[in-house]
Image (cartoon, rainbow, N blue to C red; front, side, top):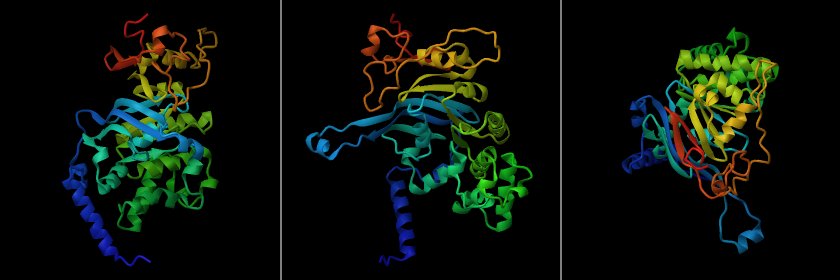
Length: 368
């Protein structure tokens, strides 16, 4: 049995933190004093997240070459303070991994993530703990995201207790009630001592939102937050997120496979395909003037309210390629309706369309 006194462990943690600060890492004080640089809360540069491919025992004995799943492969973008950036793409494109990496839930293989001008990868353990108070996540399935054995009060209060942010029970109750009210569960006292199974799916998702905003974060990663909800409830949740942006100044990374949802809620859209962002820009600009063939295909299947409207839909054929065996050249070329011979040989560069609107396609690079 380990007989090391708790005080000695605490002193060792403090010593480790000081040593990391001395070696050039970023401590808690620097994070507390940080402010938004310009208008950007986040600046992501060439972010990479690779996962090793597991091999059978025999294959690992005869092969020394390692294979990787390139989930996120050189992604760069910014997130402005108080904006909603939608990250759109098919399942397996890397959008969820990107969001989780911003919060430190996945380890980055390469690149840099800057939060308020500070590089997250250089944060000390103490700074990471403080950072996670400012950046929260809402998961897709509200029932599996919360403990079914806990009351709503305990679920929402847990982040406050873990981070030692309340000094007494009265303060804790006041903050929980305020968070539930802001999440649209009114009157909040009627929900405090219920259990998750007593609530509807929409109400459970509001509990998850309350658990995120109770810490008063700067940033929330919303990972398909309405995908498991009825259509009639989705609108209320989306309105709630927009209200939080306007009234509380919360910044959102809204992850979705549904471009129509991104169109409704976001200020900017980033379209992701197989680990790369292929188009990014102001929402109205991207929807009205799409430049990448993948974006065009996604927009072509958005439902329109006019039953008499006729337009040509682009249906992509084939499955998304394996991220462990990415095609050469442009990674979209096996499914692209506008493919050229050079697409299988050369990777496209980002081209500025107008303002902050960028797309990466060889046709935009002057090839035809």
